[in-house]
Length: 135
Image (cartoon, rainbow, N blue to C red; front, side, top):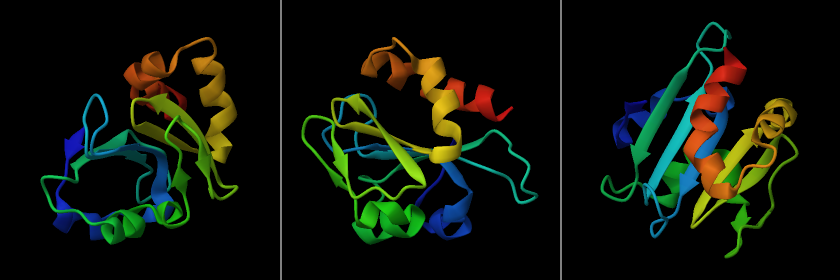
């Protein structure tokens, strides 16, 4: 996973993001970070993923919305709910302030891989599963 910083945000096309993990500032794991998987310029799915620590890099809510426009209308609930998500995305609570968004076209396959896994187990294997699905 490649680490990027605030200046790199503009190089990412929001429509290319297929999986998007948002960890709130007080989340367990990597608090104050974003991880996402994108498709390549040619449209062929590749294993391109990014880690963006937004708290230490002064990433604002506007920056996050520019990168992932659904965040503008999403309301994350304290115990793992989500409202305001467009139909093109599905939500999976990973617990402890961690939230995963999966493009609708990959959700069924992804959720089959995650059957019977707890939120913390999903948190530990979502990336590898996404890469497997996209390979």
